[in-house]
Structure formats: structure tokens, C-alpha cells
Length: 363
Image 1 (spheres, rainbow, N blue to C red):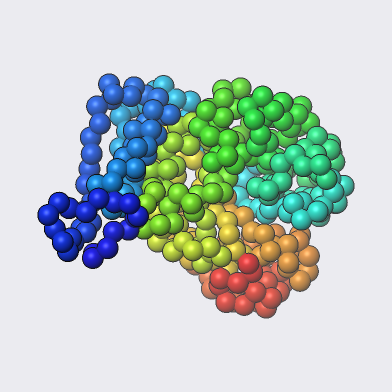
Image 2: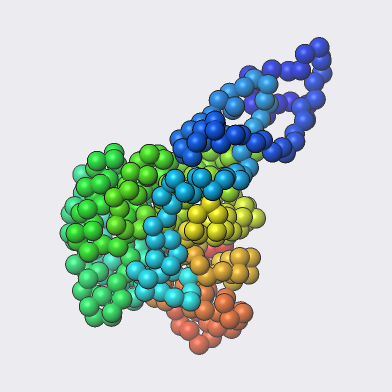
């Protein structure tokens, strides 16, 4: 290229018209330089190298870590198998939604919405990343309102929905929030990993008795530039080693900038058995049943958590029907049946197709 990707770079000496070239290289660091420390690893592979003027661009693509890292870091406590056991779901994706109390729902209003969803036997519900412990919906009040609804539904149906309460905070507060959810009978906590950091996640994992649902908000800042940052296959290894059980990966035909090939690569990287046992890829962002066939065709896996916001909540027959429509879409996808064909005998899916149209809608 005739111009660098980044400002402030140093042009080659004695070259009035420099050409900037791109290459993919492998760099080997001795383990003795850092030991199995995640924080030192981050400083080594994603630290001051990015500051050097000699680089006109720099992106970390992947990591190949020795076994010492998995031996000395906790890794996921529950992963795919433990999450399935707690959620009571086998042989298909876990299906769920995001409650958006950040737009002003009170704890009671949140519980009313959860009641509709658990009556339909939904698998998973999570707080929005913007909803942690605000004045209008304190975590303690939210837990106190939501968990009795979930427990009553479990008594009726024999299945307890997994609700990921957002406990993101300072380390001591996260520990207290976790204990509050645990004592109320909850089965999952959520953290915004880029906000709480590696040490925060590791400390939560050290005492946690619940799966850790990791939201990657802020990820675009780290990867969106083609000439700067890191790719997801490298990024996810840090959080797996730190101890998360689920990690967001975006979704196919999403509402953000990311192309489908990148999302598929992210899903595959979470399911690899290294550097730890696999974790649950969380597929979200503009999802509804319409993307289920492409997601299954591209990944050939049901070991994922498939979250739909408006694509479930805005269903014309209500949120409970929205959940059933997404489950029907995945049944059709796995069976290789076109959605419009499957919809002929499934009212909820038929209404969803009429509402959201071609795959990629329902955002």
C-alpha cells in the first residue's frame, strides 16, 4: 500500500516514496519470559508492540499456547456439559432471549415478562449488558422479583430456566452479587469481561459456584480496524483460561459490522478442545428463526446458545410464541426441512416468517 494503516509510523530510511507491505508471521516467545500468567501473556502479545513506530499496522490473529497455561489457570467450571445439565437441555441448541430492563423496566415489570417466557419453558434469559445494578432496578430487587417466578415455573414444568444476572462490578461487589444469585436459587451470572478485566474474571471464577456468562461488549473497539487489534481466536483464549463458561460470538446476518465468515470462525474457536475444554458460543445480534438454517449449515453443531431479542419479543403472538417459533426453526434446520415447509404445520413459525420476512430480519 502507498500509505500506512496507522498514524505516527516511521517510514523506511532513505526512501522518498515508501511502499508499505503486509505479511502474516509467526512469533515464538519463550515461556520463561512470562510463565503461565495471563496478564503477562497479554502484555507480551498485545502490549507495547502495538506502540512501535516501525509498524504501520499490527493485528494479533491467534495463539498457540503450551499446556502450562491450562495447567495453571482455572478454565471453565461448567462449559457445555455443565450448562446443559443445569438448563435441562440436550440434543439441541439452548434457546433464549435478552430482557432489556435498561430501557426502564422495574424489577416487577421484568418479572412479569419473565413469567411469560418461563411459562413457554424457555431455556435461557439474560440481563442486558447495560443492566447491572442501577438505581431504577437494583440487582437485589431484580433477583428477589425474578427468581420466585422462575422457581414456581420449575415446580410446574420440572425445568428451571437459566437466568444470567449481570453482576459486573468491582471484585468485592461481584462476589456479593454472585452469592445473592446463588442463595436465591439462580443458576448463572453474567459479566462484561472487557469491563471487569482478566483479574476480575479470574477472581470471580475462583469462588463461583455458577456458570459465568461472558459478554464481550467493547469487542469491536479491539478488532474492527483491519490494521489494528486482535482476532477472536486469540481473544477467546484469554477468557477461556480465566474461567468463563459462555462467550458471545455475534450471529450470522447480524445487525453489526461483522461478516458471517468471521462469526463462523468465532463459533469454531470456542468449540475447539484447546486451550481448555470447550465453552458455549453465544450467538446473538439481530437473530430470529430465519438464521437457524444457515447457522446450522455453516457450523454443523447444536452446542451453542442462540439468543434472540426483537426476533423473539416482537413476535405478533407474544414472547412465548416467539420462543416456540425459534425452537421450531431450529427443529426444521437440523432436520433439513425448509422453514416455509415446516411452518405449514407450526403456527408460531408461520407467524414469525410473516412478521420478519427473509432471513436477516427480526432485528
